[in-house]
Image 1 (cartoon, helix red, strand yellow):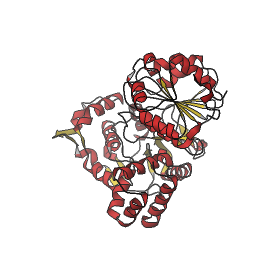
Image 2 (tube, rainbow over the protein chains, first blue to last red; image 1 turned 90 degrees about the vertical axis):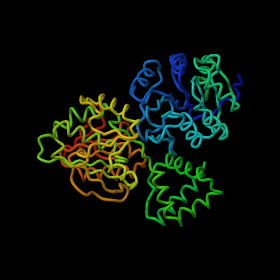
Image 3 (cartoon, each protein chain N blue to C red; image 1 turned 45 degrees about the vertical axis):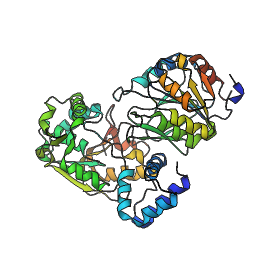
Image 4 (cartoon, chains in turn orange, brown; image 1 turned 30 degrees about the horizontal axis):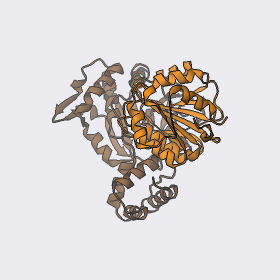
Amino acid sequence: MAEDKINPKCKVVIVGGSAGSLNALMQILPELYVLNAFALVIVLHRRGTDDMTLEELIKIKTEVPVKIIEDKEPLVPGFLYVAPSNYHLLFEKGETMSLDTSEKVNYSRPSIDVSFESAAEIYGDSLVAILLSGSNADGTEGLKTIQNAGGIIIVQDPQSADMPFMPNNAIRHTTPDFILNTDEILKFIISVNS
Amino acid sequence: MIEDIELETLINDIYEYYGFDFGSYSRASLKRRVNRIYQLEGFKNFYEFLSKVRYDPEYYKNMIDEITVNVTEMFRDPAFYKAVRNEILPQLAPKPFIRLWHAGCSSGEEVYSMAIMLKEAGLLHKSIIYATDINSKVLETAKKGIFPLRMMKEYSENYRDSGGQEDFSKYYIANYGIAKFNEELAEKMVFSQHNLVSDNSFNEFDFILCRNVLIYFDNDLQKRVINLFDESLSILGFLALGTKETIKYSISTTKYKQLEKEKIWRKIK
């Protein structure tokens, strides 16, 4: 693992995932105790109706403080944010997030591509993106945009993913900086900015 | 993606040529929507797009309809409607006359949802629902009360989850892929164009709903709109926003009391 590529001025680590990604997160989050001066944002495909359960589940699993995202929520280093169901999550200048109920993208709202592209626009090379397990093509376009804007892109090793389609699709169409299993992803997140 | 400066130029041009002010819209969403239209039409460059907007009013009008988000559904967020059904309507029931304002009603799915609930509570006959939007095209759809038939399965599930106990299909007539809602529901609806950015209060209401509209506005404009609602709301009236929206950045919360879990506030002074 090329540790030297880890961005020393990272402001945001954004994680996207679909089917099987919660499993990966449940291996990563319990080992995560504090974030080194960056915010962690999680964008998962979820059923429209499971309103609070994902946030509650994540809260139970990690020591990192979890914030529920409301419109124009400030993005504060050290906190973990979860994209709410049924909204696209966007990033604004001035370190806030906004929400959008426009059409689904890749059959999804939140769409990972939408959040990744928006984050790339605001955070450029101070962004790290991680794409996890899933059975949908969402996320690949967003990773391209993030890489073009100077950010670091990481894809979960398809062999360690419950649903390898999404990571495979990203690997086929982009050049990830790292392809990591869940254990390595955890180590990476811990090493960001350290 | 279009450049920030291009978006700001477009915003200025639209204001200068048409008087419509997007200056206080949240940029991330606006930029995405403008970019989508720009890419869709295959313009050679942004300047070509700008001059089309400037000199072709018909194109401008369609563009506005495309930029404004009009995604909605019946009984959207059933838990919200359940709270309205069980906690708000019973408090409005004793009034001799109930005035509602649905601001940013889009194509009307939520207005018909409200009419159905008022009907079931035996209140529709003494209610009036003002339903407004800036987009004239969606208001035409709303007036007709015609929605895609393929959506009815989801809507009837939402309806049931919101506490509805009737057979949902009794509220519409299905025909060639469309569901036409009973005209009786629309009898108490008044549709009109209203712009939250620039228009003023036009009546006093007992219940104002504005769901998932403020998310497209920046904080200054949100303040303006919340104050507009405050002026338009009677004492002890209710204000309902989208599930991820809040009044806390916009107005003194001592004036309002929030209903436990839902985004519904009661004006207490």
